Image (cartoon, rainbow, N blue to C red; front, side):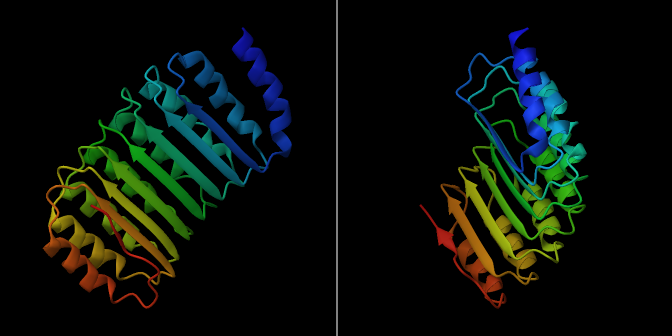
Length: 238
Protein backbone atom coordinates (compact mmCIF):
# COMPACT_ATOMS: atom_id res chain seq x y z
CA UNK A 1 0.00 0.00 0.00
CA UNK A 2 2.81 2.40 0.85
CA UNK A 3 4.47 1.81 -2.53
CA UNK A 4 1.24 2.63 -4.38
CA UNK A 5 0.70 5.77 -2.32
CA UNK A 6 4.23 7.04 -2.90
CA UNK A 7 4.08 6.68 -6.66
CA UNK A 8 0.66 8.34 -6.85
CA UNK A 9 2.06 11.37 -5.06
CA UNK A 10 5.09 11.44 -7.36
CA UNK A 11 2.85 11.11 -10.42
CA UNK A 12 1.19 14.44 -9.63
CA UNK A 13 4.57 16.14 -9.85
CA UNK A 14 5.73 14.53 -13.08
CA UNK A 15 3.71 16.70 -15.46
CA UNK A 16 6.20 19.60 -15.16
CA UNK A 17 9.47 17.64 -15.15
CA UNK A 18 11.80 17.82 -18.17
CA UNK A 19 14.76 15.84 -16.84
CA UNK A 20 14.11 12.70 -14.85
CA UNK A 21 16.52 10.09 -13.41
CA UNK A 22 15.62 7.03 -11.39
CA UNK A 23 18.40 5.03 -9.80
CA UNK A 24 17.69 1.52 -8.51
CA UNK A 25 21.16 0.56 -7.30
CA UNK A 26 21.98 -1.90 -4.54
CA UNK A 27 18.26 -2.50 -4.06
CA UNK A 28 18.56 -6.15 -3.15
CA UNK A 29 14.99 -6.36 -1.83
CA UNK A 30 13.40 -4.44 -4.70
CA UNK A 31 10.25 -6.29 -5.72
CA UNK A 32 7.91 -6.32 -8.70
CA UNK A 33 5.24 -4.24 -6.94
CA UNK A 34 7.48 -1.18 -6.74
CA UNK A 35 8.64 -1.57 -10.35
CA UNK A 36 5.08 -2.08 -11.59
CA UNK A 37 3.88 1.15 -10.04
CA UNK A 38 6.97 2.98 -11.24
CA UNK A 39 6.19 1.82 -14.78
CA UNK A 40 2.63 3.08 -14.44
CA UNK A 41 3.93 6.51 -13.43
CA UNK A 42 5.96 6.97 -16.63
CA UNK A 43 3.03 8.15 -18.82
CA UNK A 44 2.69 11.15 -16.50
CA UNK A 45 6.08 12.40 -17.73
CA UNK A 46 4.34 14.30 -20.52
CA UNK A 47 6.97 17.07 -20.69
CA UNK A 48 10.12 15.05 -20.05
CA UNK A 49 12.90 15.39 -22.61
CA UNK A 50 15.66 13.49 -20.79
CA UNK A 51 15.16 10.18 -18.99
CA UNK A 52 17.76 8.04 -17.20
CA UNK A 53 16.96 4.58 -15.83
CA UNK A 54 19.69 2.85 -13.82
CA UNK A 55 19.44 -0.68 -12.46
CA UNK A 56 22.42 -2.14 -10.63
CA UNK A 57 22.70 -5.17 -8.36
CA UNK A 58 18.94 -5.76 -8.21
CA UNK A 59 18.73 -9.57 -7.94
CA UNK A 60 14.94 -9.61 -7.58
CA UNK A 61 14.36 -7.86 -10.89
CA UNK A 62 12.83 -10.04 -13.62
CA UNK A 63 12.05 -9.79 -17.33
CA UNK A 64 8.40 -9.07 -16.55
CA UNK A 65 9.48 -6.02 -14.55
CA UNK A 66 11.37 -4.69 -17.56
CA UNK A 67 8.29 -5.30 -19.70
CA UNK A 68 6.11 -3.30 -17.29
CA UNK A 69 8.50 -0.35 -17.49
CA UNK A 70 9.21 -0.63 -21.22
CA UNK A 71 5.54 -0.74 -22.21
CA UNK A 72 5.15 2.87 -21.05
CA UNK A 73 8.26 4.39 -22.65
CA UNK A 74 6.51 4.76 -26.02
CA UNK A 75 4.08 7.21 -24.36
CA UNK A 76 6.85 9.76 -23.81
CA UNK A 77 6.21 11.79 -26.95
CA UNK A 78 8.71 14.57 -26.16
CA UNK A 79 11.58 12.31 -25.09
CA UNK A 80 14.84 13.25 -26.82
CA UNK A 81 17.56 11.85 -24.53
CA UNK A 82 17.46 8.37 -23.02
CA UNK A 83 20.02 6.63 -20.81
CA UNK A 84 19.64 2.97 -19.78
CA UNK A 85 22.01 1.07 -17.49
CA UNK A 86 21.89 -2.57 -16.43
CA UNK A 87 24.65 -3.88 -14.18
CA UNK A 88 24.64 -7.23 -12.38
CA UNK A 89 20.91 -7.78 -12.92
CA UNK A 90 21.34 -11.53 -13.01
CA UNK A 91 17.73 -12.47 -13.76
CA UNK A 92 17.42 -10.17 -16.77
CA UNK A 93 17.92 -12.07 -20.01
CA UNK A 94 17.76 -11.38 -23.75
CA UNK A 95 13.98 -11.45 -23.49
CA UNK A 96 13.98 -8.51 -21.10
CA UNK A 97 16.40 -6.56 -23.30
CA UNK A 98 14.15 -7.24 -26.29
CA UNK A 99 11.08 -5.96 -24.42
CA UNK A 100 12.91 -2.74 -23.66
CA UNK A 101 14.46 -1.99 -27.04
CA UNK A 102 11.33 -2.90 -28.97
CA UNK A 103 9.68 0.00 -27.14
CA UNK A 104 12.67 2.31 -27.49
CA UNK A 105 12.38 1.83 -31.25
CA UNK A 106 9.03 3.65 -31.15
CA UNK A 107 10.47 6.87 -29.64
CA UNK A 108 10.77 8.78 -32.88
CA UNK A 109 12.07 12.07 -31.41
CA UNK A 110 15.09 10.44 -29.79
CA UNK A 111 18.36 12.21 -30.64
CA UNK A 112 20.58 10.76 -27.89
CA UNK A 113 20.76 7.19 -26.59
CA UNK A 114 23.11 5.74 -23.97
CA UNK A 115 22.91 2.01 -23.29
CA UNK A 116 25.14 0.37 -20.69
CA UNK A 117 24.63 -3.39 -20.73
CA UNK A 118 26.85 -5.05 -18.14
CA UNK A 119 24.99 -8.35 -18.17
CA UNK A 120 26.27 -11.91 -17.95
CA UNK A 121 23.14 -13.30 -19.61
CA UNK A 122 23.28 -11.05 -22.67
CA UNK A 123 23.75 -13.00 -25.89
CA UNK A 124 23.57 -12.26 -29.62
CA UNK A 125 19.77 -12.42 -29.65
CA UNK A 126 19.66 -9.56 -27.15
CA UNK A 127 22.13 -7.51 -29.18
CA UNK A 128 20.00 -8.15 -32.26
CA UNK A 129 17.06 -6.43 -30.55
CA UNK A 130 19.30 -3.43 -29.85
CA UNK A 131 20.37 -3.43 -33.50
CA UNK A 132 16.80 -3.61 -34.73
CA UNK A 133 15.81 -0.68 -32.52
CA UNK A 134 18.60 1.47 -33.98
CA UNK A 135 17.26 0.98 -37.50
CA UNK A 136 14.09 2.83 -36.42
CA UNK A 137 15.89 5.75 -34.76
CA UNK A 138 16.80 7.66 -37.89
CA UNK A 139 17.16 11.00 -36.10
CA UNK A 140 19.73 9.74 -33.60
CA UNK A 141 22.71 12.10 -33.32
CA UNK A 142 24.51 10.80 -30.23
CA UNK A 143 24.98 7.14 -29.34
CA UNK A 144 26.85 5.51 -26.48
CA UNK A 145 26.94 1.71 -26.15
CA UNK A 146 28.86 -0.15 -23.47
CA UNK A 147 28.96 -3.96 -23.40
CA UNK A 148 30.67 -5.84 -20.58
CA UNK A 149 30.91 -9.36 -19.16
CA UNK A 150 28.42 -10.76 -21.64
CA UNK A 151 28.26 -13.74 -24.01
CA UNK A 152 28.10 -11.63 -27.17
CA UNK A 153 30.05 -12.98 -30.16
CA UNK A 154 31.40 -11.62 -33.44
CA UNK A 155 28.03 -12.32 -35.03
CA UNK A 156 26.20 -10.09 -32.56
CA UNK A 157 28.69 -7.24 -32.95
CA UNK A 158 28.47 -7.57 -36.72
CA UNK A 159 24.72 -7.04 -36.53
CA UNK A 160 25.13 -4.08 -34.19
CA UNK A 161 27.83 -2.47 -36.33
CA UNK A 162 25.66 -2.75 -39.45
CA UNK A 163 22.85 -0.86 -37.73
CA UNK A 164 25.17 1.84 -36.36
CA UNK A 165 26.62 2.30 -39.84
CA UNK A 166 23.16 3.17 -41.17
CA UNK A 167 22.62 6.07 -38.72
CA UNK A 168 23.26 8.84 -41.23
CA UNK A 169 22.54 11.66 -38.76
CA UNK A 170 24.91 10.29 -36.11
CA UNK A 171 27.60 12.79 -35.08
CA UNK A 172 28.91 11.33 -31.81
CA UNK A 173 29.66 7.70 -30.99
CA UNK A 174 31.05 6.16 -27.80
CA UNK A 175 31.57 2.39 -28.12
CA UNK A 176 33.02 0.37 -25.22
CA UNK A 177 33.74 -3.38 -25.10
CA UNK A 178 34.92 -4.89 -21.82
CA UNK A 179 35.64 -8.49 -20.83
CA UNK A 180 33.95 -10.02 -23.86
CA UNK A 181 35.52 -13.47 -24.17
CA UNK A 182 33.75 -14.47 -27.38
CA UNK A 183 34.77 -11.67 -29.73
CA UNK A 184 37.83 -11.70 -31.96
CA UNK A 185 39.77 -9.44 -34.32
CA UNK A 186 36.93 -9.92 -36.80
CA UNK A 187 34.70 -7.73 -34.63
CA UNK A 188 37.16 -4.83 -34.65
CA UNK A 189 37.55 -5.09 -38.40
CA UNK A 190 33.77 -4.97 -38.90
CA UNK A 191 33.32 -2.08 -36.46
CA UNK A 192 35.98 -0.06 -38.26
CA UNK A 193 34.52 -0.80 -41.68
CA UNK A 194 30.94 0.14 -40.83
CA UNK A 195 31.71 3.20 -38.71
CA UNK A 196 34.02 4.63 -41.38
CA UNK A 197 30.94 5.33 -43.51
CA UNK A 198 29.66 7.89 -40.97
CA UNK A 199 30.37 11.61 -40.85
CA UNK A 200 31.27 11.58 -37.16
CA UNK A 201 32.52 14.62 -35.28
CA UNK A 202 33.23 12.76 -32.05
CA UNK A 203 34.32 9.13 -31.75
CA UNK A 204 35.58 7.21 -28.74
CA UNK A 205 36.27 3.48 -28.89
CA UNK A 206 37.45 1.50 -25.89
CA UNK A 207 38.37 -2.19 -25.92
CA UNK A 208 39.38 -3.65 -22.57
CA UNK A 209 40.33 -7.20 -21.50
CA UNK A 210 38.93 -8.99 -24.55
CA UNK A 211 41.27 -11.98 -24.63
CA UNK A 212 40.93 -12.89 -28.31
CA UNK A 213 41.69 -9.39 -29.57
CA UNK A 214 45.23 -8.98 -30.93
CA UNK A 215 47.30 -6.15 -32.36
CA UNK A 216 46.15 -7.20 -35.82
CA UNK A 217 42.56 -6.43 -34.87
CA UNK A 218 43.45 -2.97 -33.56
CA UNK A 219 45.47 -2.24 -36.69
CA UNK A 220 42.65 -3.29 -39.00
CA UNK A 221 40.15 -1.13 -37.14
CA UNK A 222 42.48 1.87 -37.10
CA UNK A 223 43.15 1.62 -40.82
CA UNK A 224 39.44 1.81 -41.54
CA UNK A 225 38.78 4.64 -39.10
CA UNK A 226 41.37 6.84 -40.80
CA UNK A 227 38.73 7.39 -43.48
CA UNK A 228 36.68 9.47 -41.00
CA UNK A 229 37.47 13.19 -41.51
CA UNK A 230 37.18 14.15 -37.86
CA UNK A 231 38.34 11.76 -35.15
CA UNK A 232 38.53 12.89 -31.53
CA UNK A 233 39.80 9.81 -29.77
CA UNK A 234 40.45 6.11 -30.13
CA UNK A 235 41.07 4.57 -26.71
CA UNK A 236 42.85 1.31 -26.09
CA UNK A 237 43.05 -0.11 -22.60
CA UNK A 238 44.70 -3.32 -21.45
